[in-house]
Image 1 (tube, rainbow, N blue to C red):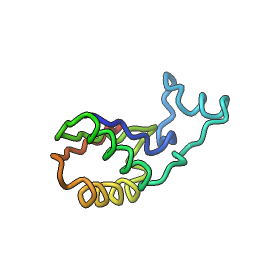
Image 2 (image 1 turned 180 degrees about the horizontal axis):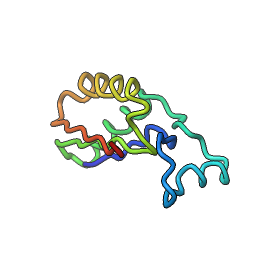
Image 3 (image 1 turned 90 degrees about the vertical axis):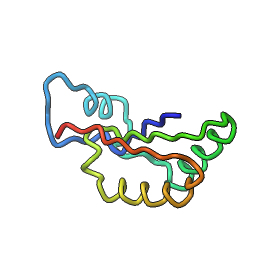
Image 4 (image 1 turned 135 degrees about the vertical axis):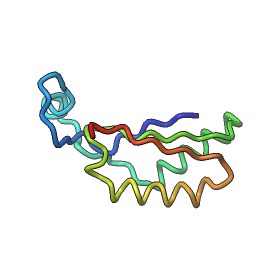
Length: 96
């Protein structure tokens, strides 16, 4: 199963065609997610158990997710520990 995790809606570029930051400000959306890593991992684990899928792909998205590299590292460490019964793949979708 694939999981697309928005680490932040913030970005270090100001591309004219991007509407992410504009939409956040206009719609009073948070720049960073408000859920915890524990809640996220529990959701992934529960979903995997329900579907019986042995593979997990976690895609880090944003804004620019690498702005939250410390949080990405923490989440990867937790996922490796808590989801060790599954085949894990991590992908960083970045403007870099």
